[in-house]
Image 1: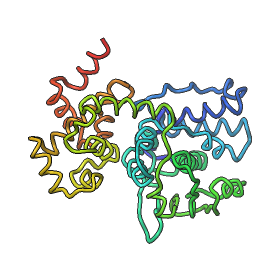
Image 2: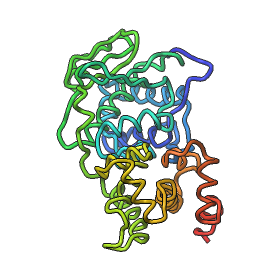
Image 3: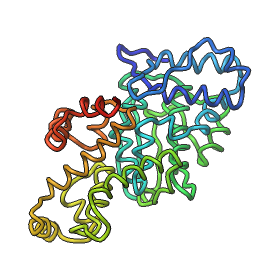
Length: 334
């Protein structure tokens, strides 16, 4: 592993994937681990050198070169933390990849992700500006990306190409089989290339935990809008989906409602309202749901709701409820 003054970190939820897999496949090994299972949470981070040490130790015990791919295949949304929740809320993979780029550092903050569209392909690429964390770390990370993507969609779509910055391992055939394409090594960067058509692929229904959270959010919104009394049909849903997709703009909401921006603004004015007011109400209700769950920091909630920063989120929340998010959360816990 090439060291760097700031080698990055991974989330505790992500590291728990290793412990989850060992408990499932090798319970005798997990009982002997000289590492403590980290407490899951968005703010609990594990430095990359420690993560590398965990993977190195596991390999020394198992002597299985396919280990990183087996770990990756066991990924669940819970291992992706906030990113798992956000991705499962999106309507298609294009939105999910956009949120991946936005929230990647919450789960995997090593080398920066670059996303590019070239012709009929979408390219996800990582360089080595923070150094090279090594074969185990990179192989688990790319394996998790592909396995989690397959988890989100009903019909498997495999990459056109996968390339690693690391040297060729002793088992390249395992990598070809896992990614269902020819995998390259010794590249100038690590990248995954998919067909651009993948962006429009709808996501399958979220798992039960995600579904429960979404249902709770829907119920909160419906309290504001009695059946048959919504001034603009579908507005609340379009606002919520736009926020979830990270694009809470007038143009995006109008597009989802299949009306022009001018028509949407006119209809809101007729109701003595505005786009900003309606968006703020929906955001605050979504924030209340996140605060009830209690697993996200205020900064993460602000990011999820697509505010510019935590301060903007705090001011908006207080303007609507009369309480700061922190005071609201404390009051609900009493």
